[in-house]
Amino acid sequence: MRIDNVSLPYPVLGISDDIKPTLEETGCANPDISIIEEGNNFRVLVVLKLENMDIFSYIQDDYAEFSIEVSCHSTMFRKCISSPTPKFDFTVAKSLLNGKMDFESFVIAKKDIRNYKNEGLNSDYEGHIINLHKGDLLVAYRKCSIPLNLDLRNVRNMKSFMTVQKNNRAIEHSVTYDLDSPKILILLPEEMMIEYNKKPANSSENEERKSILKASLFVQALTYALLNYQKYRDKDYMWVNALNYRMKEPDIKDFCVDIINNESNILESQNIDDLFKLAHMMLNQPYLGMLKQISASENYVGNILTEE
Amino acid sequence: MENKQALFKEDFCNTLRLNLKAGQSILNYTQRGEKFEFSDKDVCYLNDFRVNKDNLAKMNDNNYSSLESAILLYEALPDLNPLLASYAPFWLYISHVELITYMRNRWPNVFVNRDGTQNSTDSQISYIMDYWFPSLGSSSKTWLPNLWWAVYLTIDNSREDKYALTKILFKQEDLRTRTLGTYSLFRHKPATVAILSFIESHMETTFNHSFQNRCRYMTKYLNYLGGCRLLSYMDEAFFTEMLNKKNDDISKVN
Image 1 (cartoon, each protein chain N blue to C red):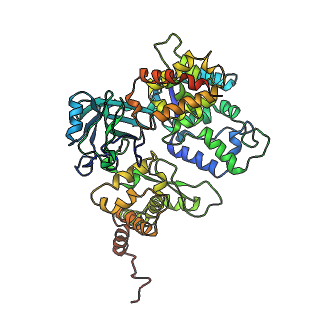
Image 2 (image 1 turned 120 degrees about the vertical axis):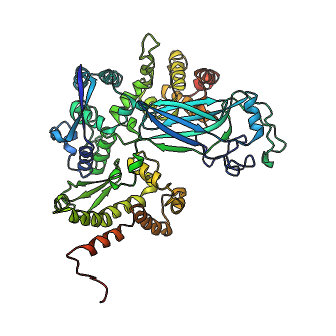
Image 3 (image 1 turned 30 degrees about the vertical axis):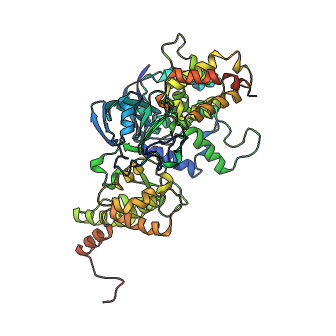
């Protein structure tokens, strides 16, 4: 169910300030989720936190329970699992999932609740009698998604989310990119593809080529993908999952807050500057790596643009 | 029954898509087109995967309704699971090689629309993309996967006719491709069973008239109910009760 930016006709802890203190204020908004591969299954462990004593009482009195809706858009999988405790431990067959697993966590009314009471109710509800029906929400935690097909050990490796292919369009003579694909597709015209595929003479030439390609083709491709990120952010593509995961890693997390939280498809110029910087951070400063490789090369003749 | 199924490698899937987007392969998607050319290196195989090629051949004969084709396809692929069914390269091989005759005949209006108007190149490309190319993450919207998912989500082995609910879903294209079949509620089996059973049991009364509009009203109503409660928490009895309560209102829709 869609609970982003909506108000329901009854108060829900986790939606705006319907009930205070909010889930954010008590540090309870984010479910703690971990997924472990076990043979043909994924084992899922979820822990929810709740500090609102009135809602706890409804759970203890069997009027409400913790519930998680687990779904996978690609495979049409959708399942609701409920528990009287905030800890969940269940398995889902791997054959039922692809791409990512989406989690929506709630406390749900198990049966009708007449004259619902909560000490933290927003003053807007003063004087109103609140009746909840079975299936209504008492608490709505923050939604989250966990990528499944992503090799998390390899998420910093460009190969895991970018690939190079020949562009069959005869009229195209420059590099183009395609994002409607599991990986970011870098499309090279035939003459460039021939050069790209040439084997390096030795390992030092190989390293030099890699650093140059990283600082040219790949950093541009990643910048292009980041520029279009808002349009694709909810798609189940491997490159989107890789960027979503990478943007939450500690080394760049703070830098990405605005990009992740930006709902708009149109980027402010401030964001565009940040995207260039972000692409360089994600590829571990490719210009520096390239310059180091070039200056170490036997054929290096020095600066070409700066004055002696 | 064969025990092996080919599928295109991802690079070749990209090539197919990019060739189409460049307008180079449009003719291949029509009855006048040649076969798609590919080599061994463009293909990989699923071993120990049963495929009833006779069923696929029957689909290519093109004498079957959408419902019959869906059941033929579903029964042709007894080992297909949701993970593989959501993998575009699997469907791209089937549509571009094994069911190419079926697909070309089923979706013939590449150049000329049903109303006789000529399609622009962009419209030709988007027409082919819509029916032939499963988009990642929503393969169910494309024709062949959609047929398979429609059976997968409605088959009920506890019934004497396990396809009874599938037959209701296919009764009207709108129900499968625009309303119920596209709602996330369709993925909640208790809801799907309750809705299709309700239509089945009221076929001679509520749904003997204005079928499309009454189904639209009903599915919109259930969607509305999901606006403020978690529908995946609710069981089949809840949906049946809600629909029975709403039956008079549904009957008034023209």
